[in-house]
Length: 506
Image (cartoon, rainbow, N blue to C red; front, side, top):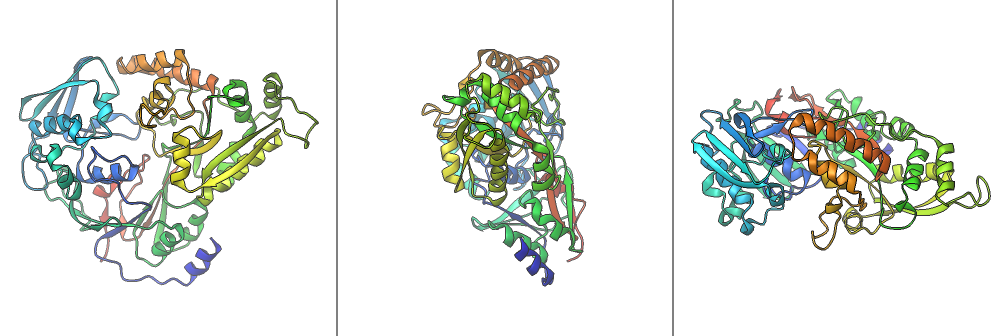
């Protein structure tokens, strides 16, 4: 980063391109929300194709294209669309388009990776042009948050138009598609017919810049206006000193964690897992590695989530960790500083910040007699190992935690990655606990007040089982140019605040 500082001191602002330029780390895998798996694809598609609902800062579903919704019974939800909705191509958006979109995502020919999320949906009924009903096979409360799927014109919803919709998407969002000459450049323009009013930004350029140093230099040169959650904390002091830039932060909903393989060996013992948790001191990592831009975590859900409940958590307690390791059969063989109690391998990516964090974790665990070998792998290789259970320890983060049903995805025994689910299960540590499974299954079938009670019990159970070591919830951090005004970062990392921002100057 010393190189960035040296170059930054000599950078001069260059003429900015027309509109606002946003730098992103990687291209979207798809601009069709039915097909997008990556966070980048999903977040860009929100600008083009909003859904019936979106989620507020606490993760609660709120109306978007819908004017209102009501649960008529545990298996029936009715939505009323806003009046006068139109698509980018001028066609009206009606309940028939909603039905066509949800029929298509469950169509095998489309091969949507999101189809499983709608397995509880029996059928979609059109009552009239502005009223649509969702009939469920059985109660499934998390479905409401999943009705944020982008609504498409019925004429483009079928699998036959899959490539056309992905290449040149049509929706009813604040911005409409203009061009995507290659995977590294995307241009959007404001939609005059957007129901909240056309955005004040005349043109949005998204440009893929994979290298962090290059992203910093592009900001310093005046060739970029926004980088959202794609810069390490160590770069921010340099950018804060630049008069043409501002650094905006707010508490985020993502979670960084230490994953553990519970399938066999020492980590199959909850006492060992809790000992590791008590050997890790999160506070200095947050202070010095993340420059204070994170909140220590007690579990998967951030405090801002509507379903969060307090638990005891893992306080830094080396003496208690030593007692647990002794009890689990891993005594200190020759006193402090000698041979380790046990040895584990920690896998992480080659990202500089993530590797440096892994090295601190190695040091902290080593002080408690747990020797750790750190292996840094190119991300695709690393992630493939994690998906297939080829690890003992790993570090990863959830980009955002919105719907508390994510606990069922991440910790339910039915969601362990396997050949059967194409290694797509999110319970990568392979936790199996019947009591937790029952709590999470029941929480998905009941109304909100009862879900709160059940999720509180589930969080207590997870605190006892320690399937992962929760580390921290990283802040949402935006670096913006003075040309971009009225932009407030979303705690979920969404780009949708751009619809309410404005450009100042040429």
